[in-house]
Image 1 (tube, rainbow, N blue to C red):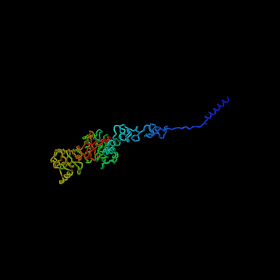
Image 2 (tube, one colour):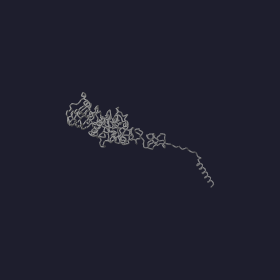
Image 3 (cartoon, helix red, strand yellow):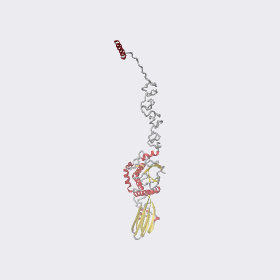
Image 4 (tube, one colour):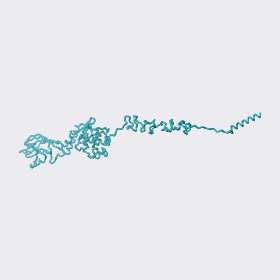
Length: 436
């Protein structure tokens, strides 16, 4: 029994020794695989069988070395090399384009209208519009100051009388503004407000003012370009009605400068003593120069005694006859009447401001009734008349030019001095046409 226990103890001791590590320890070998031989072991190589790739930063399945966008999981390739990935590039084969905002098939860089799918090409450069733009930009179509200004000018015109309104605004510019002669230039153009303040401007400045005044009075207008000048133009006018109001303005202008009405009736009954004279006509020294071409005298004379009628060129002849200075007495013998008691007629086209002398050579006083009408023909009719009012058809409407260079006797529609091709442009739409 004792012997068995010894053996068991020995076994325990031996086993304990083995378990306590007293026996010799053998080394173990660990093998790390690099299947593609790229220097990155398979455990860290995202592409263990592709020697050219080992990392996929954005996790899109394409290695960083071949991924054009290694940090963008949505893009891997940039075929045209424009910096925009093929997935986001509307034009992956065109390095100059990558976006098509309006979806018209033309890239935004080449599309002149990138937000309009109906057009993409820029119109060719319009040389006329380039020339006209600085001028039409100065036109003011809605301004309270200009509206107030025009309302004062148009006080004498009915709101529906378009021709009266056009003529009134035009004449205000002709009469109250100085036209400076200067080459046409867009560098020194004035605004309408500046022109009103200065009361002067170039032809172009005055035309811009006219166009603006018309707009602010409710009448749309345009600018007309020639090689040398810019004019205003207004449409929807009746030529006959326009001439009527223009003619009255011109007549008034002559009357102001001449100092007398263009038609002067004169009716009176006189007692003409023996050897006395009556003169009815112009004052001594007053001439027609530059204002009047000629005058006519329509006359009717009734006398209870025979009288003598002379037609004389000036009042000087009356004084010469009165003073017996017959050497300086001149008369129009074709209209001399002796022993007149009743006479009606017309003295046509006297080119000087003369008149009629009635002389009582009888032995008794004569009672004489005279009825005269002196009518003057202004010189402006040689140039400015209904026949020289020119209309142009624009959009099927009669239109007239307004030439701001004509001075006191100009009128709307006179375009005889406007030479060369005429191109009219709407300052609101920039649409233009060449006048016929």
